[in-house]
Structure formats: structure tokens, C-alpha cells
Image 1: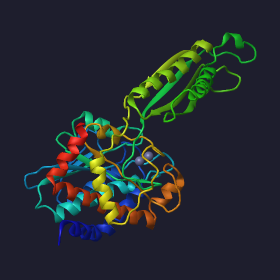
Image 2 (image 1 turned 180 degrees about the vertical axis):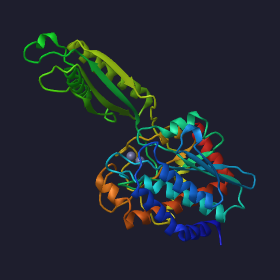
Image 3 (image 1 turned 90 degrees about the vertical axis):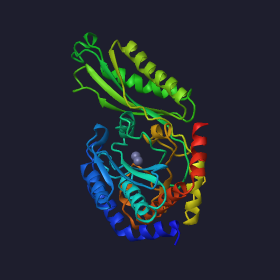
Length: 387
Ligand SMILES: [Zn+2]
Ligand SMILES: [Zn+2]
């Protein structure tokens, strides 16, 4: 039996346990940095499979590294696990499946292909939904010495290679002066007007921006009562774009929208720019080619919508800028159910989703086998990365 047949058979054997793990994590959605149950579930499984485990890496209690080395111990491949959920709507991004795929692929390789040379890791990365877990782990050197990274992400479509948008969160806080809204309005400074003008200024800006830009926000403070001129109001925006240079320009333009609003309303303005900027995703097409071949072997078809349609942002973008990385998406339903909706959360434990999860576990494992058994492929991947 060759390696491919062996890993596929091993994943079939692990299937009931992987589905169980995915459903258990789904039933206890945990927010960014608080994914204790999920992190525990994944590391307990890997511990049972005799991986070497380090918990709480990079100063994040719910991050972990599991590893197993064989032969000369190179090349090294990291299977990335995400497991945070969203406020109120739970596992509406399907992160309950990502860890199961990565632990399943890693275990199948460890149990069937350990006479190859290589080192495999499962790296548990908390807080993908806004907390920048991977960025913190990169800063702490957690990915040092790793040749390439693979993960698969649930979606409304199946696609191997795509771009992603850079994103940053900006909070604008306007400070004004309270006053009786009827008797002495001229004594007040209206902070809510600062926020409303900012929102409208940004809407006016949109027409003059390139089409890949996304700016979206909410008002987080807007006063206490209609008869008090609000002395404090705030809004939180995300700004996104495909290209890092243009992204930085747009961020400045958005800040100018708030600065102009502050001037017009006489408010004081505080601008807080999030410390963690998610970078655009840099696909590796050599690595993507290996994934695509394996998907075809399993009869998985891609939706041909190009690589810039229907894209968001992820801290995997930052990782893709420092090592070759691949992040294929897979559809978890036949109909068009989109991420971050209650319907997606519901679909994330359906039979269809679980079947796709197991198929993607196979794709990820088969891709790793191709890499571990072909030093020339590894060189080709890193040549493309360095170009
Ligand atoms: Zn998400
Ligand atoms: Zn996600």
C-alpha cells in the first residue's frame, strides 16, 4: 500500500472521532483568547496520539504547539488550527472544523508515513476573529524554523487559492461638552454630531476609492438622553484593502474624515488604531497546485470565481508573508450560505459539512505527503515564495 492509500485509510479510521471533536467544539462556542475547551479538546487528542505538546505558547494560554519528527526531521510542515467563535452567533465561521482537519491530517501522517523525513506540527492559533492570535505568535517566534503552513477553512465556496484584504480596526472617540439641549444648546459641544459627520464623510469618500476597499463600522456610544447634548460619542470602523501601500493611504483618508468632523463640531478627537494589522494573503501557487491535484483526486470541484471575489481578511495573511502558506476554502453546504450568519453556524455541523471536513482532512494530509516525499517540490515552493 502506498502512502496516499494509507493516509486515506487512516483518516477513515479516525473519522468518527474527528466528527465528534468538531461537534463538541461547536456545542461550546468560545470567544477569542477564551478557547479553553477547544484548545484542551485538540491537545488531549494529540497527546493521546503521542505528539509532543507545549501549551500556552507565545504567552497565549489557549495557543499550543504539537510536534512529531521522523527521519532527518526536515522539511517541516505546520497544520494550523483555529477554534474561536463569534459573539452571539457561535461557530458561524466553522472554526469547529479547522482544528479537526489539522489534527486528523497530522495524526494520519504520523501513523502511516513516519519512515519519510520530516517534522510535522499542529499549531493552535487563538483569536482569528479580530484578536490577531497568529500575529502575536509570529512576534514571539513560534513559527521560526517552519518551512510551510497549511490549513483549510469552511466557506460558501470551494477554492484553492485566493487573495485576502489587509484590515485594521480604528476607534474614533469624540469629546464634546454637555448642556441642556433646549435651554442652553449654545453652551454645548455635540460629540454625537462628530460621529455622524465621520460616518457621512466616509460615505462621501467611498466613491473616490478603488473597488477592493471595504470600510464598515458601528456607532458604539451616542449619548445618554435626548435632552442632554452628548459630551462623548464613539464609533468603531474596519478599513480593508488588497494592497498594503494603498491600504495605508486609505487609513489616513478615513482618519481625515474624523479629523474634519472634529473641526466642524469643535470636538476633541481621540483616534485609536488597532495594534494588529492583518496583512493581505500571499498565495503560493506551487503549493496551491499540489492541493488542487489532490482535490481533483478526491472529486472535489472548485468554484471558478477568481481569487479576489468574496474575500475577507485573516491573520493567516501575516503568516503567508513570512512562510509559504496555503488556505483553501471548502463549501459546507450545497446552497449559498455565507460565513458569519446564524445559518452558517447551523450548517457547520451538518452531515454535508462533516463529509467535506473529512475530504479536506484527506486533501491536507495528501498534500503533506507530496511535500514530505519530494524535496524538489519543497525547493520549488520556496523559490516561488522568495520571488
Ligand atoms: Zn470569520
Ligand atoms: Zn474564519
